[in-house]
Image (cartoon, rainbow, N blue to C red; front, side, top):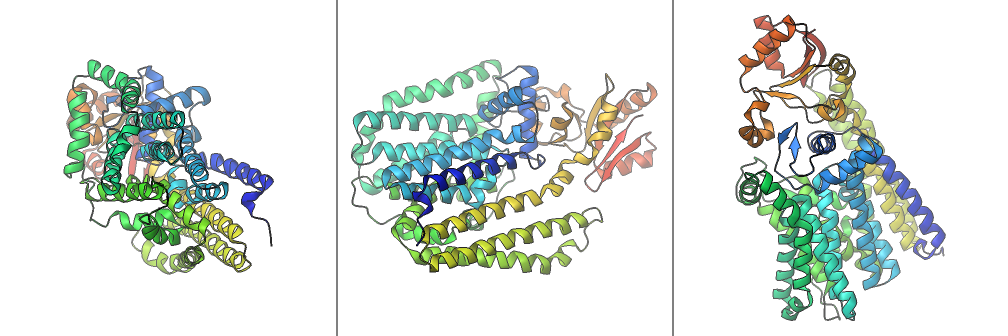
Length: 556
């Protein structure tokens, strides 16, 4: 019988080094895909270029939807390493790793070293956590700090903790909630607070509130969060109402952002997100409510955390796939405890579902591809065909991991089986992400960048977005674009500074004709129906880029 991989320092160090090399390599393996990736990379680029670290702007326009932490970190990364894809994802990659380390460390402190490694493995190789760790969006930044706050709370309240440990862990929890708040808003403290309240109601452990170090914690929280909120309010009096009312209350209680969905919206996403550990999701249902022998119930706390976050976002009027990322650290803690204690049936179920997914990808993609590409523009057909190969390759990896893991489990190599399942699932997920890169280039319009740069390199050149806003192009071209007849998500900022855009198409036509007459360099990214109208009107223009999503014209 082989020794458990979790008992060998050489194996652990080798696997960790290989994992980290692959993790950081994948940060730069794909182009930045609109909307989120282009948006937050561009906001950080503008912050660095202007030197204004207080008033957030997108495309040169005030943008108050979110707090600044990720933009600060991205801008610092750009300052040190230059502009690029991996630099734009570096912060999210680090916060994802922070969550993995926090969960592994917490499970080891609560139970034993082996359980800690299993918890870290489950979170690190889960499809959603590993995937979102390689996407430049705010969801992973806040999720990483949520993981720290949950773990610090559990460690600070566990049985037998010393007074100094309790104080330090609770202050860490308060600091993590502050950084979560600076990442995405008030949910950074409201949601953990709600979980704590529910836990004390269920367990009737009211004295727990006396162990939270509320005085020091609140002071620390305000010391981290208040300076920026005060500064931006002083410079921009319109910020507090928009941020606190529109972006919090209105977003949750209404469909103002047009991001609604049915009540079951997150159920398939949760199932997808926990792969290849689906069996342990089912095992967690009973385990989370099973009373432990200790006074403090860490698994119950984790389970309340997962359930509350899931329900909170399910009833919200605004839903996006990344909203449930914070539940996975809690599920990893519960699942790891189940895996370490035995529960071979749940491991078999995880292996079986991973194998079935592999078969479904291999056969299903081939079966559905003809109907999927039917009616698609000729430009897009090769993209679907190419991505199908990548998805089938991911299917092969899922299937191979499931078969290998099953064989190892039959040979009583439980931990090696867990490792085979996790690593194959992780690589399969990254293959699926990497295969999307050609689609990403199409969505971002990167094929047109050389022709656009050739025109825009002229001093005094002009850059427009007519009827559409390109989220990634400004970052790659290192310049903002003037919006025409399409405010997009910058409507609030443009209401404050209307001189920064062209609200009427006729005004753009007059400016464009002046550029042509004066032989000025100008580029416009134009919606196809507007381009057709320009053609009918005989607007002088030269096409330098054309795909089903946009037409790019030059005045020269």
